[in-house]
Length: 154
Image (cartoon, rainbow, N blue to C red; front, top):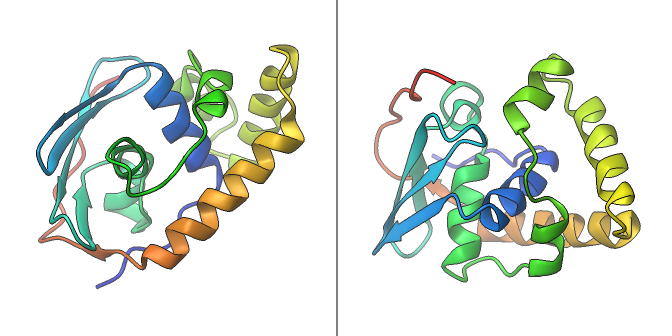
C-alpha cells in the first residue's frame, strides 16, 4: 500500500522541525517531537522505500506526514536547503493549525507572511517546497507494517 502525497504545507512543517532540533534518529528509527514538545511521533524505515509514522495525517488521512518527511530529509533521502529550514524555525504549528481550523491554505498564507517578515524570499521558499514535493512523489513510498494511533496530548 502506498502513502498518499502530503499537502505542501507539511513540507514546511518538516523543515521547521529540523531547524527546531526536534528530531532524534537511531538507525532506521526516529522520533520527531511536536512543536509544543509535549509529545513525539515515532518513525520506522526499512532503508529502502517503506516507512511508517504515527502522526495524525499519516494515521487518519493516509498521507506521508511531516515527521516522516523530516526524518527522510535528515537521513539524506530527501535533499533540502537548510536556509529554508531556518526560515521556518520556532513556529508553533499546532497553534497555527487550530487558529485556522486546519485550513492548510490559510495556514500557508500566515506562515508565508511570517517568513517574509523574517526577511526571507517567499518565492524561493515556495520553489524549494515545490522541488521537495516532486522529490517525495518520485520516492513512491509504501507503508511499513500496520498503522498505529497517534499520541494524545498537546
